[in-house]
Structure formats: C-alpha cells, structure tokens
Length: 430
Image 1 (tube, rainbow, N blue to C red):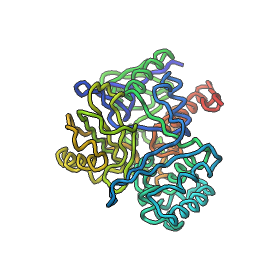
Image 2 (image 1 turned 90 degrees about the vertical axis):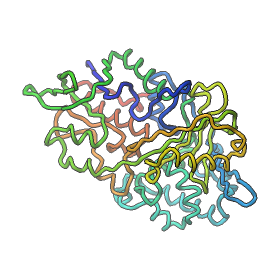
Image 3 (image 1 turned 120 degrees about the vertical axis):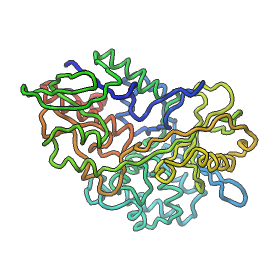
Image 4 (image 1 turned 180 degrees about the vertical axis):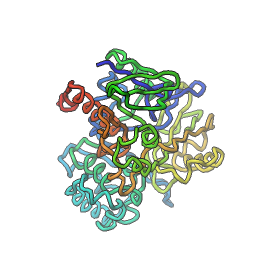
C-alpha cells in the first residue's frame, strides 16, 4: 500500500515540537508520559528513540510548598515495589502537605475510584470535583494531590474535568500496576524525536512525506476514490485518514460523513502556557519539581536537552491556563520570577539571561463533563474516510498516548477496508 503523509506545518510533530532561539533548542512545551502509556512507548521504540526519553526507575515527584512561616517544605510522591494499592501507602502516610485525616480520606477515595468503570457514560456527565466532594475530599486535598496530578494530565482543574476521564487517568496511572505512573520525558529536543527520527522511520517504511502541504479539501470522486486538495496540488487516494484538530476536521469533512458533524464544534479547547527562564548559574539541582501554594505548577530543567553550555534553563509548564494565556510577557515576568526566587533560594542571587513565553491556545481538547458523547470514533459514514487525533474517542484525555492510539485505530480500520488487515501493534508486541 502506497502511503502519502501531508503535513500543513514545515515539520512533523504536531503540537509537540522544537525551535531555535539563539543557541538554545527550545521545546514549545514540556511533554511527559507515563509507563502505562504503552502506545507512545511503542512509538518511541518504532522510531528508535526510546533511549532518548527514558522513564524514571520509580515514581518520585518532589512537591514543594513555599507558603509556610518556617520556610518551604518538601514532600514527595513516591512508590515502592509493593502491589497496588500498597505501592503508594508509605508515601501517602508521610506526605507532609496533608493532615492525617486528609491522608486517610485519600485512601478511601482511591479504593472507591478503583471500583469505577471509566467507560461508564454516567461518569462522563459529572465533574471530578463533585465526585471527590462526595467521597470526603477537602479543598486542600484536591489542591495538594488530585489536582496536582489531574491538572497536568487532563489540562483542567477537578471542577472542569469529566469524571470519566479523571477515573481513566487515576485508575490506569495509579491503580493498575505499581510502575504505571513512573514518569518519562525527552532528554533531547522533542523535534529530534517527533520530526527527525519519525521522518527517518517514515522514509525507511516507504512513506512519502510532504510538509508545508495544508489540505484545503477532501471529496469523493466519481470512481469511488478520494480527491485531496492541497494549496498547489490534488492527490487521488483509495483511503484517507484525516488527522487534524476537531474544527479543521469539521471544515474538511464532506457532507454526510458524520451523523451530527456540529458535535465536533462543541468539543472545546484548553490552553497551556509555557514560561522559559535562562539563568547564569544553576538554581535547581533536581530534574523537575511541582509546587503548591504558588502560581508555578511544574518546573523542568531543560539545560542539557537544549544544548546550553553555561548556566541553567528552566521550563515552567502551566496547564489549564485560561486566565493567563494572553497575559503580556512583562506581566508574566513580574509574576513568575519572584515566585521562582521564593521556591528556589539560589535564584535570588542569579542573573536572568533570558525570559520568554510560548503559548498553545488550543493545546488540548477541553475534558469537560459530557465531552465523551461528543468524541467520534475513527469510522465515518463515508467509505474509506477515517478520523484520527487525540480528540477522537480513544478513552484517553488529550495526550501523546491518545494521539498514537487514535492512529492505531484509524490505520487498522483503513487497512481492513483495503483487504490488508494488520495485527494491532500492542497486541503484536505482547
């Protein structure tokens, strides 16, 4: 089967890419994955990049709360090798950011969560905060634990997140197996993985790749094939996989392709703000940390990955950033540099060499209650036309894992329709 990949941007990688800023190679935002992200891990293996984005040996998340009179307090969310749910028991028992009663309530809520079926449509109709409240979770517990994880993985706070998606994240990541939530991230620029290595793998597989080729139209031909229009060309195809964002898909889908195409327009989007700070010296001795009681969410050391030789480069990933996504750089600088000094005392004596911001206003689909019924599957009503994208019905929130899984589903459906069935890559690997 001959395959042509059309990409509207000048590089591959979608919303996980890199660019140059002087001598720095900068990721547009910090992306992480978990050990339970089996599809994305398969993708890394397939392109020969798994060693460039390793997973930590065991989950270990430093959690810093600077808002104490006696100074900042460090807690850690760590796991042991004990079976689920005991793997987190020791960490929870000593977690300093919650009271004894709050820690006990977390254990009870986790057991209740473990009994849920994330695919239950009833869960999609309520928000995560409501469920947490029903299960005795205080505002502090939500802030110091559930939102700490949920905002980063769902790109929404508990009150704005579908309980179905939240249950999927927490049940899969924390309650499926001891190592499921171990964190992995790229030790090289994302472009090296998602563009350079991915393109090499596509070339080796015989895929024709055309970048800067935005699709302007998709239509059925008289011969029951497909015509795909780009800015300067028209391609004929037996099968089309439309892997664009939901609004672009709505604009491109031929009439009758979906029973209710306007549902795609009801799938909202959520922004992620990324703040980049370059210091003249080292101010952080850990690969990353997360913060409570601060506008700062997650901070990663990107010094080595960016190619920086002197000083340190930190990247702040700010999810669910609706209230800040359009804030002027000067305002963000005035807010975040003092916060970094509060969190990291060595930053008080360091010189800021560079401060800049990247904004992804439509970084993910919004995981709002009710979004599950809006997400379409890979199949359309038009023979030979399939949908892919993290916003389709993968069961996952908008993650790199969900994106790869959507690709598996669409490609598998297309190959079956062409009489070329192929084993599912994950089942094959198993």
